[in-house]
Length: 285
Image 1 (spheres, rainbow, N blue to C red):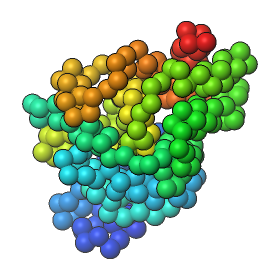
Image 2 (image 1 turned 60 degrees about the vertical axis):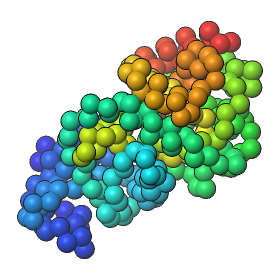
Image 3 (image 1 turned 90 degrees about the vertical axis):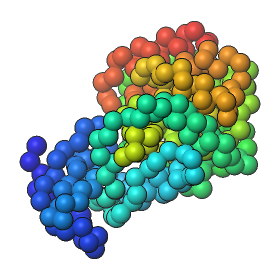
Image 4 (image 1 turned 180 degrees about the vertical axis):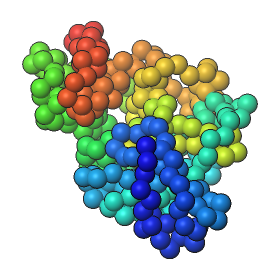
Protein backbone atom coordinates (compact mmCIF):
# COMPACT_ATOMS: atom_id res chain seq x y z
CA UNK A 1 0.00 0.00 0.00
CA UNK A 2 1.33 3.41 -0.97
CA UNK A 3 0.22 6.12 1.42
CA UNK A 4 0.27 9.77 0.43
CA UNK A 5 1.89 11.52 3.38
CA UNK A 6 -0.22 14.18 5.06
CA UNK A 7 1.82 17.07 6.50
CA UNK A 8 -1.01 17.93 8.91
CA UNK A 9 -0.42 14.69 10.81
CA UNK A 10 2.76 16.01 12.43
CA UNK A 11 1.91 19.69 12.50
CA UNK A 12 3.13 21.32 15.70
CA UNK A 13 4.76 18.18 17.11
CA UNK A 14 8.45 19.05 16.53
CA UNK A 15 9.15 15.57 15.23
CA UNK A 16 10.44 16.54 11.80
CA UNK A 17 8.75 15.92 8.48
CA UNK A 18 7.13 12.63 7.55
CA UNK A 19 9.21 10.58 5.12
CA UNK A 20 7.37 7.23 5.11
CA UNK A 21 4.10 5.70 6.28
CA UNK A 22 4.21 1.93 6.70
CA UNK A 23 0.80 0.22 7.06
CA UNK A 24 0.10 -1.71 10.25
CA UNK A 25 -2.27 -4.64 10.50
CA UNK A 26 -5.25 -4.86 12.82
CA UNK A 27 -8.12 -2.63 13.69
CA UNK A 28 -11.50 -2.28 12.07
CA UNK A 29 -12.38 1.39 12.03
CA UNK A 30 -9.11 2.92 10.85
CA UNK A 31 -6.25 2.63 8.44
CA UNK A 32 -3.17 2.60 10.67
CA UNK A 33 0.38 3.61 9.77
CA UNK A 34 3.77 3.81 11.43
CA UNK A 35 5.05 7.18 10.24
CA UNK A 36 8.80 7.79 10.19
CA UNK A 37 10.26 11.28 10.20
CA UNK A 38 13.35 13.17 9.11
CA UNK A 39 14.49 13.40 12.76
CA UNK A 40 14.49 9.64 13.21
CA UNK A 41 11.25 9.59 15.16
CA UNK A 42 8.26 7.37 14.57
CA UNK A 43 4.61 7.69 15.55
CA UNK A 44 1.43 5.78 14.84
CA UNK A 45 -1.32 7.52 12.87
CA UNK A 46 -4.86 6.20 12.62
CA UNK A 47 -7.08 7.75 9.98
CA UNK A 48 -10.16 6.98 7.95
CA UNK A 49 -12.79 8.72 5.86
CA UNK A 50 -16.44 8.83 6.88
CA UNK A 51 -15.96 8.09 10.58
CA UNK A 52 -18.04 9.75 13.30
CA UNK A 53 -16.33 13.11 13.95
CA UNK A 54 -15.92 12.45 17.69
CA UNK A 55 -14.55 8.90 17.42
CA UNK A 56 -10.86 9.78 17.80
CA UNK A 57 -11.46 12.28 20.61
CA UNK A 58 -13.35 9.60 22.51
CA UNK A 59 -10.55 7.11 21.85
CA UNK A 60 -8.10 9.62 23.35
CA UNK A 61 -10.35 9.98 26.40
CA UNK A 62 -10.40 6.21 26.83
CA UNK A 63 -6.62 5.91 26.62
CA UNK A 64 -6.23 8.60 29.26
CA UNK A 65 -8.73 6.83 31.53
CA UNK A 66 -6.65 3.64 31.42
CA UNK A 67 -3.43 5.23 32.65
CA UNK A 68 -2.74 4.00 36.19
CA UNK A 69 0.40 3.24 38.24
CA UNK A 70 1.23 -0.43 37.95
CA UNK A 71 -1.32 -0.93 35.19
CA UNK A 72 -1.00 -1.34 31.45
CA UNK A 73 1.12 0.94 29.33
CA UNK A 74 -0.97 2.90 26.83
CA UNK A 75 0.25 5.05 23.95
CA UNK A 76 0.54 8.78 24.51
CA UNK A 77 -1.94 10.86 22.55
CA UNK A 78 0.10 13.40 20.58
CA UNK A 79 -2.60 14.93 18.40
CA UNK A 80 -6.26 14.28 17.79
CA UNK A 81 -8.63 15.69 15.14
CA UNK A 82 -11.90 14.44 13.61
CA UNK A 83 -9.90 12.99 10.72
CA UNK A 84 -6.97 11.31 12.51
CA UNK A 85 -5.23 10.58 15.79
CA UNK A 86 -1.46 10.55 16.33
CA UNK A 87 -0.09 8.24 19.04
CA UNK A 88 3.33 7.45 20.42
CA UNK A 89 4.80 4.37 18.80
CA UNK A 90 5.04 1.29 21.01
CA UNK A 91 7.22 -0.37 18.38
CA UNK A 92 7.39 -4.15 17.92
CA UNK A 93 9.26 -5.37 21.02
CA UNK A 94 9.39 -8.94 22.24
CA UNK A 95 7.26 -9.68 25.32
CA UNK A 96 9.18 -10.01 28.56
CA UNK A 97 9.51 -13.46 30.22
CA UNK A 98 6.89 -12.38 32.78
CA UNK A 99 4.57 -10.77 30.24
CA UNK A 100 1.41 -12.79 30.99
CA UNK A 101 1.92 -12.66 34.73
CA UNK A 102 2.39 -8.89 34.55
CA UNK A 103 -0.67 -8.60 32.31
CA UNK A 104 -2.80 -10.49 34.82
CA UNK A 105 -1.72 -8.18 37.64
CA UNK A 106 -2.21 -5.09 35.50
CA UNK A 107 -5.76 -6.09 34.57
CA UNK A 108 -6.57 -6.91 38.21
CA UNK A 109 -5.32 -3.46 39.26
CA UNK A 110 -7.40 -1.87 36.53
CA UNK A 111 -10.50 -3.75 37.67
CA UNK A 112 -9.92 -2.57 41.24
CA UNK A 113 -10.80 0.92 40.00
CA UNK A 114 -14.54 1.03 40.57
CA UNK A 115 -17.42 3.46 40.30
CA UNK A 116 -20.75 3.80 42.09
CA UNK A 117 -22.66 2.88 38.92
CA UNK A 118 -22.25 1.07 35.64
CA UNK A 119 -21.61 3.09 32.47
CA UNK A 120 -19.35 6.05 31.81
CA UNK A 121 -19.49 9.82 31.79
CA UNK A 122 -20.17 9.78 28.06
CA UNK A 123 -21.02 7.43 25.24
CA UNK A 124 -18.16 6.24 23.02
CA UNK A 125 -17.61 3.66 20.28
CA UNK A 126 -17.08 -0.05 19.96
CA UNK A 127 -15.78 -0.33 16.43
CA UNK A 128 -17.77 2.27 14.52
CA UNK A 129 -21.05 1.74 16.37
CA UNK A 130 -22.07 3.91 19.28
CA UNK A 131 -21.49 2.29 22.66
CA UNK A 132 -24.15 3.60 25.01
CA UNK A 133 -22.92 4.20 28.55
CA UNK A 134 -25.69 5.80 30.63
CA UNK A 135 -24.97 5.65 34.36
CA UNK A 136 -27.00 2.69 35.63
CA UNK A 137 -27.20 1.37 39.19
CA UNK A 138 -28.20 -2.18 38.16
CA UNK A 139 -25.43 -4.10 36.40
CA UNK A 140 -27.79 -6.73 35.04
CA UNK A 141 -30.04 -4.08 33.51
CA UNK A 142 -27.01 -2.27 32.08
CA UNK A 143 -25.60 -5.38 30.41
CA UNK A 144 -29.01 -6.49 29.15
CA UNK A 145 -30.09 -3.19 27.62
CA UNK A 146 -26.80 -1.60 26.54
CA UNK A 147 -24.56 -4.59 25.79
CA UNK A 148 -26.94 -7.25 24.42
CA UNK A 149 -30.32 -5.94 23.28
CA UNK A 150 -28.81 -2.65 22.08
CA UNK A 151 -27.52 -4.30 18.87
CA UNK A 152 -30.83 -5.81 17.80
CA UNK A 153 -31.80 -2.47 16.27
CA UNK A 154 -28.79 -2.47 13.94
CA UNK A 155 -29.67 -3.44 10.35
CA UNK A 156 -27.02 -6.16 10.07
CA UNK A 157 -28.32 -7.88 13.20
CA UNK A 158 -31.91 -7.48 12.11
CA UNK A 159 -31.11 -9.06 8.75
CA UNK A 160 -28.93 -11.93 10.04
CA UNK A 161 -30.41 -13.06 13.36
CA UNK A 162 -33.48 -15.29 13.00
CA UNK A 163 -36.58 -14.15 14.87
CA UNK A 164 -36.36 -17.17 17.17
CA UNK A 165 -32.86 -16.17 18.27
CA UNK A 166 -33.92 -12.56 18.80
CA UNK A 167 -36.64 -13.77 21.16
CA UNK A 168 -34.20 -16.13 22.90
CA UNK A 169 -31.80 -13.25 23.44
CA UNK A 170 -34.56 -11.19 25.03
CA UNK A 171 -35.43 -14.06 27.38
CA UNK A 172 -31.79 -14.58 28.35
CA UNK A 173 -31.38 -10.84 28.98
CA UNK A 174 -34.35 -10.95 31.35
CA UNK A 175 -32.76 -13.87 33.23
CA UNK A 176 -29.34 -12.29 33.79
CA UNK A 177 -29.84 -11.87 37.57
CA UNK A 178 -30.07 -15.66 37.93
CA UNK A 179 -27.22 -16.34 35.49
CA UNK A 180 -24.54 -13.80 36.49
CA UNK A 181 -23.56 -13.08 40.12
CA UNK A 182 -23.35 -9.45 41.28
CA UNK A 183 -20.05 -7.78 40.40
CA UNK A 184 -18.74 -4.27 41.05
CA UNK A 185 -18.74 -1.70 38.23
CA UNK A 186 -15.03 -1.92 37.41
CA UNK A 187 -13.01 0.08 34.90
CA UNK A 188 -12.96 -1.94 31.67
CA UNK A 189 -10.94 -1.49 28.51
CA UNK A 190 -14.16 -2.58 26.83
CA UNK A 191 -12.72 -4.30 23.73
CA UNK A 192 -9.83 -6.31 25.11
CA UNK A 193 -9.39 -8.98 22.48
CA UNK A 194 -5.91 -10.28 21.64
CA UNK A 195 -5.27 -7.68 18.96
CA UNK A 196 -5.60 -4.87 21.50
CA UNK A 197 -3.14 -6.38 23.98
CA UNK A 198 0.53 -6.16 23.00
CA UNK A 199 4.03 -5.62 24.44
CA UNK A 200 5.17 -2.15 25.48
CA UNK A 201 8.70 -0.94 24.60
CA UNK A 202 10.01 -2.49 27.84
CA UNK A 203 8.36 -5.84 27.07
CA UNK A 204 5.60 -5.37 29.62
CA UNK A 205 1.90 -5.41 28.76
CA UNK A 206 0.23 -2.53 26.89
CA UNK A 207 -3.27 -1.97 25.52
CA UNK A 208 -4.68 0.04 22.62
CA UNK A 209 -8.05 0.86 20.98
CA UNK A 210 -10.29 1.15 24.07
CA UNK A 211 -14.05 1.24 24.44
CA UNK A 212 -13.86 2.31 28.08
CA UNK A 213 -16.70 2.01 30.58
CA UNK A 214 -17.44 0.66 34.04
CA UNK A 215 -18.82 -2.84 33.79
CA UNK A 216 -18.47 -6.46 34.90
CA UNK A 217 -14.87 -7.74 35.19
CA UNK A 218 -16.00 -11.13 33.90
CA UNK A 219 -17.20 -9.48 30.69
CA UNK A 220 -13.65 -8.22 30.08
CA UNK A 221 -12.21 -11.70 30.58
CA UNK A 222 -14.80 -13.15 28.22
CA UNK A 223 -13.71 -10.75 25.47
CA UNK A 224 -10.07 -11.56 26.09
CA UNK A 225 -10.72 -15.29 25.79
CA UNK A 226 -13.05 -15.27 22.80
CA UNK A 227 -10.23 -15.84 20.30
CA UNK A 228 -8.18 -18.37 22.23
CA UNK A 229 -6.68 -19.45 25.52
CA UNK A 230 -4.27 -17.56 27.75
CA UNK A 231 -1.48 -18.80 29.97
CA UNK A 232 -2.72 -19.91 33.38
CA UNK A 233 -0.06 -17.64 34.87
CA UNK A 234 -2.24 -14.75 33.69
CA UNK A 235 -5.26 -15.96 35.67
CA UNK A 236 -3.20 -16.92 38.72
CA UNK A 237 -1.71 -13.42 38.86
CA UNK A 238 -5.11 -11.82 38.23
CA UNK A 239 -6.87 -13.74 41.00
CA UNK A 240 -4.14 -12.98 43.54
CA UNK A 241 -5.31 -9.37 43.41
CA UNK A 242 -8.89 -9.72 42.16
CA UNK A 243 -10.52 -13.06 43.03
CA UNK A 244 -13.37 -14.22 40.81
CA UNK A 245 -16.63 -15.83 41.87
CA UNK A 246 -16.77 -19.63 41.50
CA UNK A 247 -17.98 -20.83 38.13
CA UNK A 248 -16.75 -17.81 36.18
CA UNK A 249 -15.39 -19.93 33.34
CA UNK A 250 -18.81 -21.54 32.89
CA UNK A 251 -20.33 -18.08 32.40
CA UNK A 252 -18.00 -17.09 29.57
CA UNK A 253 -20.24 -18.25 26.69
CA UNK A 254 -23.07 -16.03 27.92
CA UNK A 255 -20.74 -13.06 28.21
CA UNK A 256 -19.29 -13.86 24.78
CA UNK A 257 -22.67 -12.97 23.32
CA UNK A 258 -21.95 -9.26 23.57
CA UNK A 259 -18.87 -9.53 21.34
CA UNK A 260 -20.53 -11.91 18.89
CA UNK A 261 -23.61 -9.73 18.51
CA UNK A 262 -21.43 -6.65 18.03
CA UNK A 263 -19.50 -8.46 15.28
CA UNK A 264 -22.79 -9.36 13.61
CA UNK A 265 -23.93 -5.75 13.87
CA UNK A 266 -20.80 -4.47 12.09
CA UNK A 267 -20.71 -6.85 9.13
CA UNK A 268 -23.53 -7.90 6.80
CA UNK A 269 -22.28 -11.48 6.33
CA UNK A 270 -20.99 -13.22 9.46
CA UNK A 271 -22.63 -16.67 9.38
CA UNK A 272 -20.06 -18.15 11.79
CA UNK A 273 -20.92 -15.56 14.45
CA UNK A 274 -24.65 -16.06 13.90
CA UNK A 275 -24.23 -19.84 14.26
CA UNK A 276 -22.31 -19.43 17.52
CA UNK A 277 -24.88 -16.97 18.88
CA UNK A 278 -27.65 -19.43 18.11
CA UNK A 279 -25.81 -22.33 19.80
CA UNK A 280 -25.15 -20.32 22.98
CA UNK A 281 -28.73 -19.07 23.18
CA UNK A 282 -30.18 -22.56 22.75
CA UNK A 283 -28.04 -23.81 25.65
CA UNK A 284 -29.15 -20.94 27.90
CA UNK A 285 -32.82 -20.69 26.97
